[in-house]
Length: 204
Image 1 (cartoon, rainbow, N blue to C red):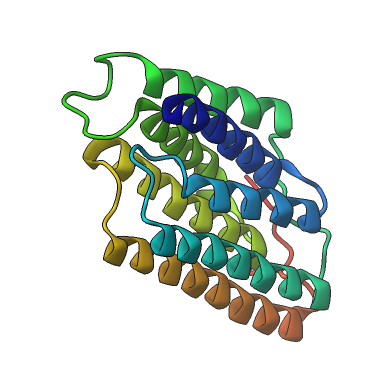
Image 2 (tube, rainbow, N blue to C red; image 1 turned 90 degrees about the vertical axis):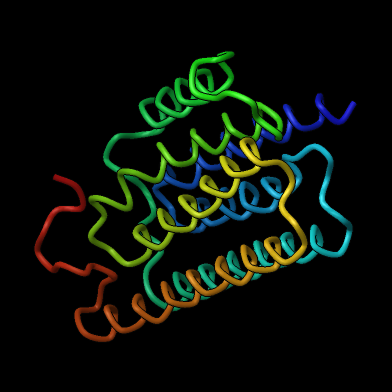
């Protein structure tokens, strides 16, 4: 039963992450990220203890709230890549399938294949915003997805994180979201946009 729930949760995580990076309205992207980050915490076998799990979920919700406040006070017309959701979805599905392929990328895993696969998909989705985004919001979104992706890959390889590690992941998510908010507000105050490189296109 846990394996089935983990697979469903992994699908929800990847689909939500695709929405996060491809939505044209930043508010929709934030909903996608928040759902992906919150559900990612349950893609583990065995499940984390109740208190660390609750902290991770609350941290995901708070990180999403910080992003929501940021775009509410600045500009909601951000949050997507130029690739579009079909390309992003195909890339994520391919990475997910590769992550599930037996003996292809992993040996002697302590955690579930679904965690490794969904983590790999999130890392692939984070590449474009982290490498090429020139506005503060999209860069922050990419870094948050990269953090969740790396955490899921670690779960797939080494098993369910200890409570202290869960605490660290939650604090890091809040920290990245808070830093994104600070940079975004400063950029908006200077140029009236979230663009970190005024006059440049969002992607090459």
